[in-house]
Length: 199
Ligand code: 5GP
Image (tube, rainbow, N blue to C red; front, top):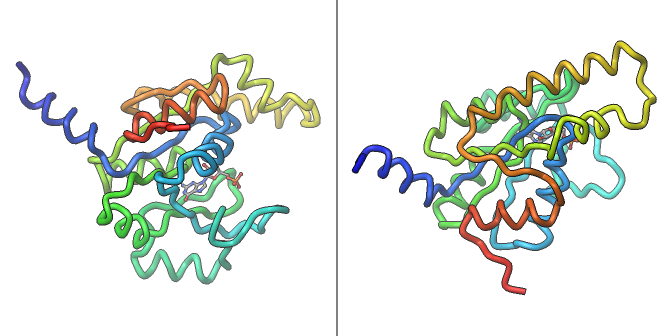
């Protein structure tokens, strides 16, 4: 018996923090919305962001919408577990305090963040569980990225190049969940967190 790997598996099995990441357009937001709706026992971290709210987004529920100044203050005060500039535009980060509170309460905690953020959490919280959300296949991802055909050839190629790099990160993760259907992927994720749908 290999004690060290058994020990590591035991830690992962009870990991209070789970990080969900994956390539752009794979549907992380949709899967976490399904988790929010169907598995209230799971605490979904509310990220701070400098981007403007979209219609229907509620401050404090979907994001904490903050100014550039407030975001910088949170970083300077050491209150960000991780943060990143996403798509070269807006800043997104995970406030540390609420995550620590929920972990102390014993709640399963889920962070839905980008790959750069996931890598930072691996440094600061190596005992977390890292889940990669993958598309069923390359063509599905391409369709979701450039499907509407509204981008020019250069932008299209840029997005596809980014997607190739992002998909190559799968090996850094503990588990892969395929987003074939949103509900199935959400159920698999909830099961991993030890939460079952009782309805
Ligand atoms: P959106 O603006 O569409 O809501 O999110 C854009 C991207 O930001 C998504 O890929 C999402 O995973 C990422 N994101 C959301 N919150 C965080 C966060 O707290 N930290 C990091 N690093 N990325 C985040």
